[in-house]
Figure 1 (tube, rainbow, N blue to C red):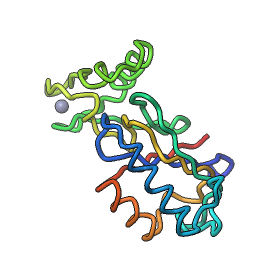
Figure 2: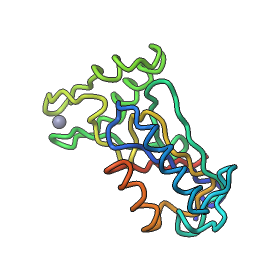
Figure 3: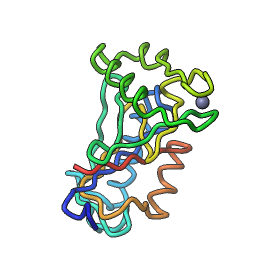
Length: 172
Ligand SMILES: [Zn+2]
């Protein structure tokens, strides 16, 4: 329980890192409000309806371009998609360069890292990270989640609007 003092926030992202899926997230929110799971401020009426153990507040983050979502406190590992070589350092540097260069969609689409072991060129958006981290065009933000486990009802609702989705957890 070393992280017990840290607040856990979850970011629900669409499957595709560089596609604006915020309209789909809006539909998820309005369905939750229509069925009475959330009130108009985004507070769950029944805390455990979305996340096992509960969540305090839900809001939509709808940026005008891509962002990079990751566990800011605990960090993450990035690996070559071919040989699994640890690319965390070069990957993190590339993300920093992208941020400092203005966070453009074009730069996110074209940025790559080269594996020092096998020479494979990985698109920044395709590099696999553990725990989950990556580019997204907005997120449903679940503040103060008790766990990373989504309820079946919430999972089914996300699938019905997004097809598939990603969950990035961050301790703050
Ligand atoms: Zn490799």
